[in-house]
Image 1 (cartoon, one colour):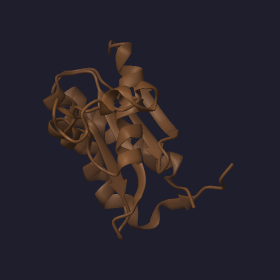
Image 2 (cartoon, one colour; image 1 turned 135 degrees about the vertical axis):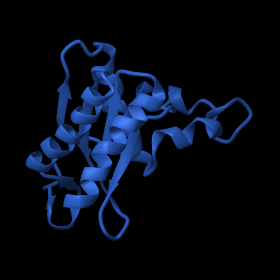
Image 3 (cartoon, rainbow, N blue to C red; image 1 turned 120 degrees about the vertical axis):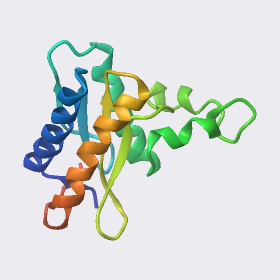
Image 4 (cartoon, rainbow, N blue to C red; image 1 turned 180 degrees about the horizontal axis):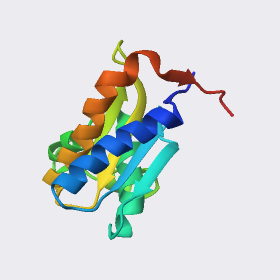
Length: 149
């Protein structure tokens, strides 16, 4: 069964990440997806890069699809390593640099994902981690099952 965070919770996570982006003075695009990488919510802050719209969504997609943070894909995707070329698969949606994180339920299952783009990789990760930290405080009673198409 596909699981997802609710729209209201996605907004809370995005709000937390946006506060961090404002704190570091860097406009970002922030995306939340369900467990299959389908978009639940996305926000583009004023003056955030246009390219960050698709990059943030793809970071969340990658984290949902592979059950891992995107920054953990950089080294395995280098030439000669086991995932070399990953970023050119799945119609180019795979992202191998930081800013995407899976959202896990209390059993450790992926129920959604979070993606941020708009700054240096370290900034994207810092802003995304603020959203993930908010998820940790609200996740226990917020999951909703989705009907598969």
